[in-house]
Length: 201
Length: 198
Image (cartoon, rainbow over all chains, first blue to last red; front, side, top):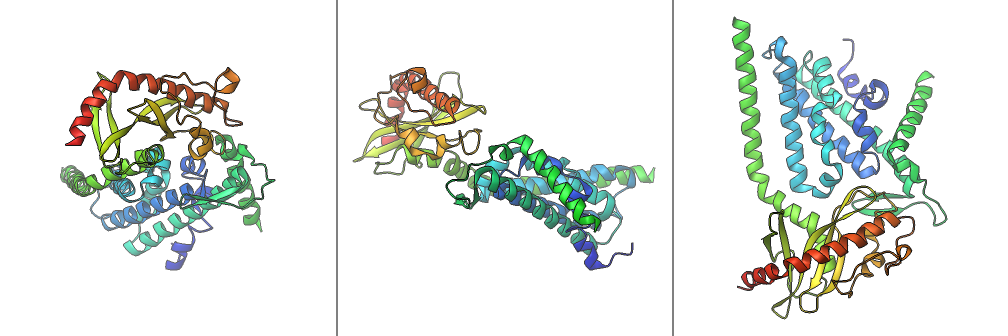
């Protein structure tokens, strides 16, 4: 591995940005980008799980027997997911309501498991933490960008802290298709296309 | 053999650690979560349907077992120290599935004090306005609980939200059904109010 420590962090932001480069974790990417709040919340939840599970798995990587490593990873990831779920219920209940089933589904999200298998089980604690943080922030940014695009053109307003901020003028007719499920596929496709075009240069 | 023992030991320890810390966390967040559920799921709707009360209806409630059906929470609104309004949840069927309706009723006149939507999965920007647009839900205010509500396109009295007829119809039907339920439950509700007084 020729990556420097800084590169471990920055690779998650662009070179290996999860939903677009690795094309992982697409289920919440499609389902939770109706509003910026949801997308951002999901990103933060995933970042927390990713950093914590990466650190713990990396710290335990010499103890965990190879044959049951996946089972161990799942236990670790699931534990942190439930911690997030309980915390969200206790402190940010309205966000929890909107994200519903997708919080528990982080357990089977490919990103934490993928990072655990591909990175944390082979690298030191500091590198794993940075890798998790970078991937998490990359994921948060991707989701927020996609959500901002969909919400802005789909409803004409961006909702922050429960208050919609009208950005488009009164004559703007919301393009409701974008906030529906098929709109998510179209937007994701467009964003992948833009990312690939930019990446070529 | 050595590998097998280490597998068992590691998995067991990890599970024990995980289970232990989660149950501890659950214990310390339990009360807070319950309060949050009351505050966020039902609270805003209760406050919007019972506006002129002298107490805080979200804090004054009792539970009712409606026959064999699920337990219902009845919120009580007091005026001048006496219970005047009750609010409880019913259901309506909207465009995107089931909607939770909070219905506030004046127990003296059996008139609707207010209607609010608690949970829904309607289209954002269209059907979701049933929750955010007070002009729509205010149409129910002051009507007798025994009325059958219908949207105007169905020959009724309620102006539907433009672009969200199915949602509006669902709310109207839900309010009608919840009204029927209220009549069934009224003896039990009056019984329950006595316990709140004390």
